[in-house]
Image 1 (cartoon, helix red, strand yellow):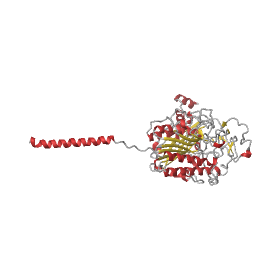
Image 2: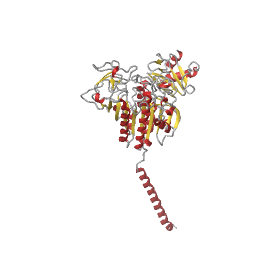
Image 3: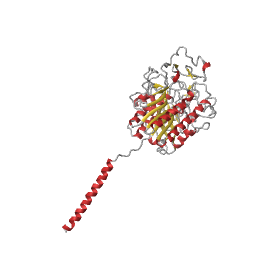
Image 4: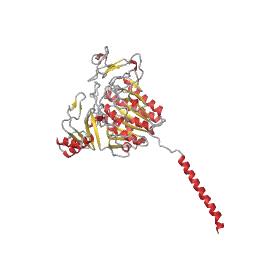
Length: 523
């Protein structure tokens, strides 16, 4: 019997061993094979300048049509409670790139064109974080976060700047379209500068023999209203004084096309690998200088015309992503740095030709204001084929892009101020922030759920130059935005419990101790 079974047992053993070795080899081959990694999406910020919540037709505008922005809004997540960090430009740009509240940086205020860089070259930024994750990084458009260390020679490489805080490529204007220097800067060098015609810049005194908007109105093609009466470039009076650099000066009416071409070129050049592009448009900030193709098209004067122009360049940029076959692998975030303003320094019929259009979309205030329209802005995320079209009521802030994009790309970077809300940005959740500190001119307020608390401040309640309510009062203000979107009904005196709750929450977020909060309550 034993002899009869020996061969069979031997054969079975050989089969078992062979099978085991075969499985083992297959497993080894499987382990040795390179793991398939999911391609990281390109990331694009399209950042407009002074565009109000109600300035796009996707948010209810009926007097103006923005079909290309609407295409993103209707194909992605359109946020009804999306916020910038500040009611003015420089602080918001600081916030979106650093993930840090701008009120924590005393230098994060509207800057002159000669201001030093206010982002530390040591701190982490969105482009730095994404570079660590294998991204190429670039900025095209408005910068306005300072350049150099306070004493810039514009005829040499200007540094530090965007390239020193994470952007591998940069093509920018230093500050704003209404401020000198009125030149483009590529990777720190003034584009097209003639070394025999050096640039000189001052925000204090004019250069001898140079005309100004104040003294030479006969040279103007655009009339100033307030604060814009210094050096004249292309017939437009600016803030600040400039001499020289004639060959490098920009042509205002071509600016939108110029930045568009730079953004398109970057995409075509870098489409083979993941990239981050911060595309910062200048519209509809003053001076509003639409290309002749758009002049008169809105019926609302230059402000309306440049909104149409901005919508067009956004459409052309999206077409480039489609043509290069990368739209389905590109996450687009579109927003604005702060709320709207009509008369912001020039007589350009923005008020007179407004008609029935509401740039704030029915919100109270505007640029410079602690009221909701100062920071409550258009906010859209779009990722074709990944984000399902939806309207979200989640409270989100541009600050939160830092931590959310870090999570998306596998980075462990984060800041205390930036909340990780990736699911909200991808339309998978309606859960946003509970609390958000908002800022206007270093004065702050609290959005908490449906409520807004504005602490007491000294100062004028209205900026008469721009005709905008600033939200300033010598008493606490309390509003329920769900029931009172226009903030007409102050509940501070009728809902003491909610006032006490939010006051304590506000001061804790601003860094007050429990003892300090108790002392404030007793006052």
